[in-house]
Image (cartoon, rainbow, N blue to C red; front, top):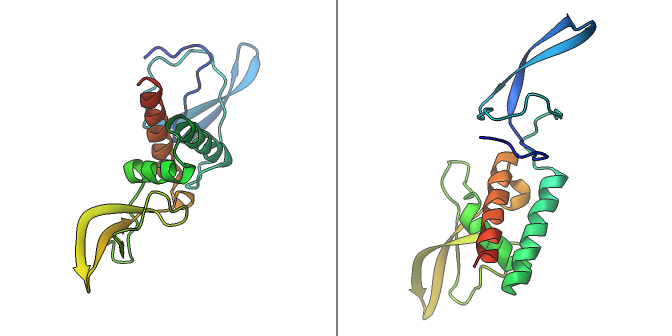
Length: 169
């Protein structure tokens, strides 16, 4: 993998060792990291930014995601809430109860789960009739603000792929 000039690469790992050394007439600190990503193709000289890992998403991720959602909404002429719910259905996480079981929700058949800005649901394809009224069964999705950083990164990656597919026809 040859990294294009100016491209940023994010990796997750942990610092395992630091060594103070005297190299080329100056003191340097050698850092050893353990990462799970492939580092082949990284340049010999680069700028390194280290941030403390957090399981929570950050403002930058949030801004990027909602920019992508807005662009998809503009291109497809759909409300942002519909785009957001569609992306959560494709790339989000299923909400689970304290026993680890998916949380199910029953709604009237006429309910439009894609346009609800507050309740994020995934259809199960199952429905039933009770007293002449049809109901659909949904699985509740984790609200994007409650996703971990890793889960939110997956959502952003999926949103980016979706945007590219739309742009490329």
